Image 1 (tube, rainbow, N blue to C red):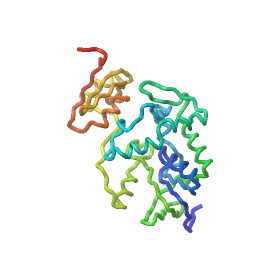
Image 2 (tube, rainbow, N blue to C red):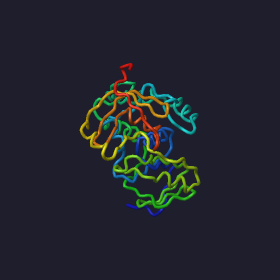
Image 3 (cartoon, rainbow, N blue to C red):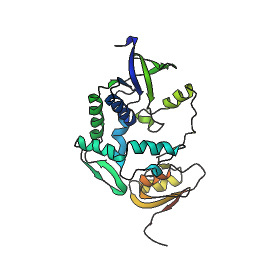
Length: 264
């Protein structure tokens, strides 16, 4: 039932993905009254599709040098406060079986649902409230949020709506709209962690190789990545291509070595 009188929370988080859920449970642990709003009818959709449905939840070697940012010092601070080991401890406390693939990548043995259920349980223990299928209609400078489910106030507002990737599961530019509303500077967006799509006539070649995965080395903008490359019916994907996409821009070239173990 829609509330006509504003309900006040200490913290309101817009976005019930991985970042929003982690923020919510941490704030709840600190005794804050927390509300999470999301336009979807269920939470954590992107978690469930990550890692091929097994959620590659962290990497043992994650460090500041693995991240691209206009402010590299932020990454240093964030990782020093919450390193990969901290999340692994949470996984182990919930007795979720996992395994290490190559290059320190950690995946669930069973399903990404294990990670989502863990975050749900932690939020429940922290007394986090959720309002789903919630459309934001207005947000003012005093953090009063008018929605189709009611009006909410808060002292602290967190926008955790993610980027533009995966629009088919609800991703949008909402976070950028809020940033513009509050006069925040926006760095020009670019595709990242995305595959390479080709057009005709080249794409017909890739269709014949679709589903094949090979180890390779991809070099882009003086950065080199050695990992698996997946041929798709539209082009290239897989870990190596996804990492290279962080550095590629239209007009730039890629160098792919399909025999990295050979010195030619």
